[in-house]
Amino acid sequence: MSVPTDIDYSPILRNVSKHITLTDEERAYFVSLLKPKHIKKGQFYQEAGEVCRTQAYVISGCMRSYHIGEDGKEHILQFAPSDWWTGDMASFLKGTPALLNSDALDDSLLLLIERVQMDHLYERVPKFDRFFRILITNAFIAQQRRMLGNLSLPAEERYAQFRKLYPSLDEHVPQKHIASYLGITPEFLSTVRKRVLARK
Amino acid sequence: MSVPTDIDYSPILRNVSKHITLTDEERAYFVSLLKPKHIKKGQFYQEAGEVCRTQAYVISGCMRSYHIGEDGKEHILQFAPSDWWTGDMASFLKGTPALLNSDALDDSLLLLIERVQMDHLYERVPKFDRFFRILITNAFIAQQRRMLGNLSLPAEERYAQFRKLYPSLDEHVPQKHIASYLGITPEFLSTVRKRVLARK
DNA sequence: CGTCTATTTGAATGTACTCAAAAGCGGTGG
DNA sequence: CCACCGCTTTTGAGTACATTCAAATAGACG
Image 1 (tube, each protein chain N blue to C red):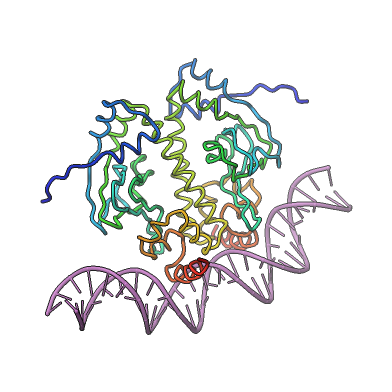
Image 2: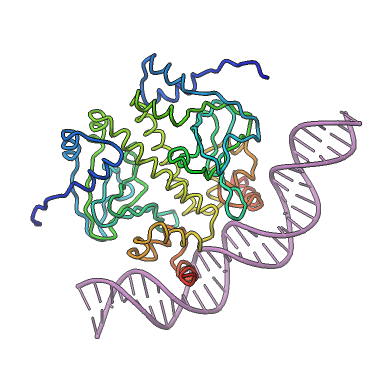
């Protein structure tokens, strides 16, 4: 049994106040809906097939969410380092079985909010409609760029872009996961990487 | 000069009321912000490089938005048939030059809303924060699925899925555009198509 | 009809994959 | 501290999926 730890809510509150302004009361209410969850490296936050009942804000560590295709291969949709949100949206909203697995790449601390609480939050503090509108819009835009890259760029360029966009991920995350994110095999990333590094 | 046409706002109002409920007054206000725009087949609603100042709801016809890569090739990010929303989000929100072109695949009628008006709308009728939150969330989910398909499926499967998901587009849209959407060449789609059609 | 563009077909090429094996790296226990 | 084990990364040969280029055919529209 672990000693109960005091959670520092300031990161998520800063995250929220980038887009909306809360009263003390609203802030307290919001924080009361969050459940901390520690996840050790390699353990799951969520598994495909189950319904995803929460959305998660990453306080520390790094999560990944990925799909296992019919061919049995992993395809990574998202890395979520600290200050990112994660969770299978489709499953969360519609109550359908999740397509995505999510596990920890490092020991991580998440703050979870449940679907019902989320609905209450929207009713009692409509500003959160705006907050998540903006949050998801940004995610949408980022994903459009990724899609565009996948449509128009060869693997070498995609990897170069990835390095520019997420330098810290490129350092900390095993190459095989980056390959999976880019949509290529680890073997091929290895050769591509040699070429990209040679550019210096 | 064309005879001024009466616009039927019921499609967009039905679209909105799928997610939020408006008073008569709010409805009237919302409608007052919309500017109808006719676009003939082949003409542009928006060009890359310019700032995208509006979001558009498609009343009738069909739009496409696409990016022209460094290689000079078109890559289609979205088809927008009637009842869809379109517009370069990143440019619209941040005021940066648009990456996307958008032109009409058929004679189309759009309803445009400008950035400033959109902001007013959010202030005066906060329910629209919710409306667009839901709208964008759905777009996000759909795009995740597309991304997943592109990562995990061969061209033949991607095309088969596209046909299932958008049967009417598959019929009405030139194959070269579908190829561009799927991320393959028109020549290769032609051979893939033969195999998919053979499945019956 | 005739012209222009879209689609099909085919041959040659390239990018990325598979499979296999070797080398590197990190943690763990002796 | 070193030796070993498991996992990740590298390397290479052979293969497959998809592209390019070219030319023929089919469709659409004035």
